[in-house]
Image 1 (tube, protein in one colour):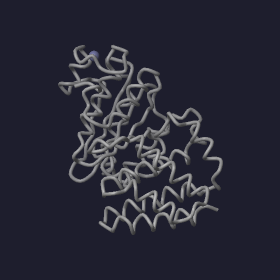
Image 2 (tube, protein in one colour):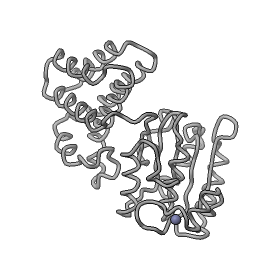
Image 3 (cartoon, protein in one colour):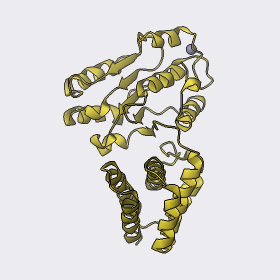
Image 4 (cartoon, protein in one colour):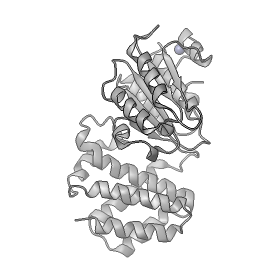
Length: 291
Ligand SMILES: [Zn+2]
């Protein structure tokens, strides 16, 4: 399997491929998605493409490196997974020892951390040191179902890819809708106008979750763009110009509070609260948050 064979999540796959072609591979990634998604498979396809000599942003699927990964015995890849309920401090310590050594065959050490969100607090603190000062060529790929269990300090050092269990219907349309709503709120459009428009994008739960993901991704991009001069961590790197322009229009702290309000709405939906009620509640918070 190579990246191009990956089912769904095309946007993520494209970004992975582009990072390889542009030689802008980050030292840490977080793949976030529920248990129905083959996160390990995608991580391995990404790693194959990184280590493969084809240089086309994907793996050739037939060289020695690709074959080794398929057989789970590539010397430069370390796998870590929960033992019992968690990834323990000692396991991360051992991983760090390995990552300090030179790669055996290529020029990169790669670690794939399954169940990364089960890391104990001590384990997270330890891993943070590696994320802060990775040895050159190191790539860590964290797989998680629930990144809320990970410290903000870890998340802020990872390129985060949110994976969808189902193919989003025209993601760009959903994102356009989210941007439109964010702009309406910023412009102080009346509540009924905003809520009327939102309801068009949130006809059912799946659509509502997709919309909230897009809206949160947008706000998150607004929040981080000033720290991310090269746009490497932006979800919507292709809209970096728009993001930078808009971000200047918000008061300090407002965007962070907006991200929190969207997250709350998502949690409410997960708790099976009514969609309309949840979204109206969120709009009120976002309106309060303008100034
Ligand atoms: Zn290959």
